[in-house]
Length: 451
Image 1 (tube, rainbow, N blue to C red):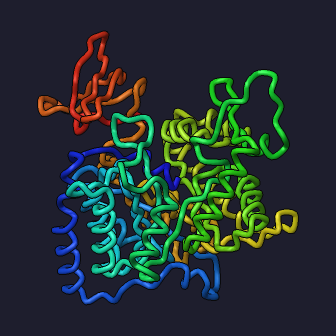
Image 2 (image 1 turned 90 degrees about the vertical axis):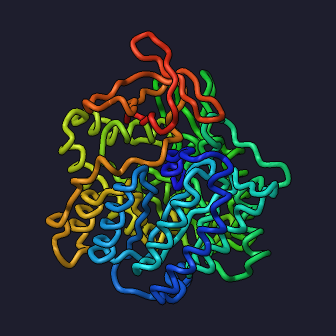
């Protein structure tokens, strides 16, 4: 998801703080770039259009919550740059602009250390000095001056405590507005990518009521959770495709898709894009299966289609952590092999790059690459996930009412953590959590989603 990773991220600082520091951060990023004398990154679209031997891969990371997490992420990014040689590396941008400074910082670090940085940028909650556009403008200036030349233009998710996305008055209303703004204000300075949704955007996926029938296309992209079937209906899917075409026509270079687990859905989406006149590269977003609970939460939240054989396999091993990771490798290999196979039925010629949503981990990615023959040495032998506990996002968009959370406070000197259920979240990010029948309030820094 693309947005899947964004669903992890929430407010860690206040609404004003993250925008107020962007100008200072831009100067810092420029200074860091001067010190490293790195040339500006190439545009990803130019790299994609080059002929190359073998199947290319790319990686995506998110900003960790703690300083230790950031330090360990830097070490992992350095390792994976050497071991996987990614075509480009994405850094996500937190829901509601919650990780603005940190996303910029990590994207700059990626650029300075040899990655082709592809920074996600949303137009949510980026008001600055009363100007709903200035926060976005300053972020783009920081990227330009820091040598970053690639942006993923997204609308973004609502800030913490809000269930619906509401545009700032006079600001951007959608990703299309952001694409147009980048091209209007910065010309061809940046390569721009946008999100694509093979199953339809989660907001366009609706319940199939009792007695309703689905067309073959609707059934092919449908999902089922708690006995309820969901799909993006054909009329809504058409609107999705029309809008995607607008984003490309406005100046976006290529598409990175939301996660999916049914390759037939992706191939149908590619065919539909071509039928709509969308001829740009389409990069499949591949969510690495690392844990049972996380897989279930992500797929349910996004209403992602889970094929029956995948569902059965995951249920059979749900209590075996190591087995889930091994299966994550095996299933990932199966998906990638299928995606790399051309099919005349879908007018499908394979994929330009396999884009892994790493969840800031490496074991599953390494295993997939080894089994696909994409590594020159056995990468699985180089796996180090001893820091996995530090790879927690800055807040979580999934910490919604009804979710189970762990509470960590300054008083938890014995290392024990309480668990409870979220009852309410204020716009300021104050959580009301029911623990053993008692309602208690906590700050967003004290709440961690249980997956």
